[in-house]
Amino acid sequence: MEKFTRLTAIAAALPIANVDTDKIIPSRFLKTIKRTGLGVHLFDPLRYRADGTENPDFVLNREPWRKAGILVADDNFGCGSSREHAPWSLMDFGIRCVIAPSFGDIFYNNSLKNGLLPIRLPRETCERLMADAAMGGNAKFTVDLERQAIICPNGEEIRFEFDPFRKRLLLEGLDDIGQTMAFSPAIDRFEERRLREWSWLPATTVA
Image (cartoon, rainbow, N blue to C red; front, side):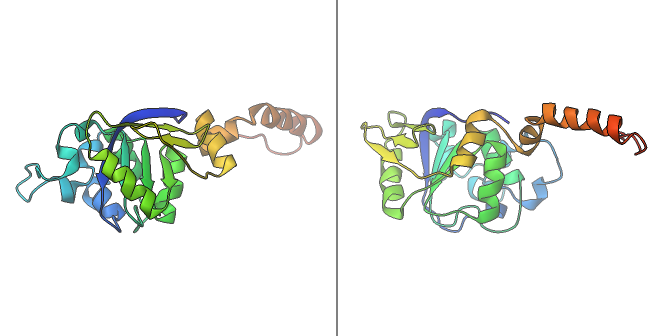
């Protein structure tokens, strides 16, 4: 998993509440298990018209937000069904951080497991950030996870709360497999001891 330490990027505002995972990435695009190639389908119902052409009114179809790395959203972002493709599509588009007053629980946890940083802030603060994001390419934000701070275009710092354990995993780039592999020396020692002291047990095999 890619580490998340510090991100400086353009932010796009999405002032729509209850954006569910089917709006983030519709079910018809879930046939792949690859994490790449999904960015083009991100927010498909909102980005494209019925004939497949881009909706010029949607923020990610307009400059400079086509290159947004941060999304400022509304309440209950990522609600709905379990869909790990949702954070995959956001990251494949280039978005590494989503800021919102609240998130769907499953989306929140899936994001953390894939290196996407979800930040909860009060609604009033999110509305201020949306207003700043509307300033365009000259309004870049910096998200510093180590300091748990968002630096606004005018230099103002906004602090956010974050679970210390989840913070360490993101800073070190550790997903579930990475956490297990961190214990490789202890696992190897156990296997050696198992073979030595309980040799009558069947040997561990890998299918």
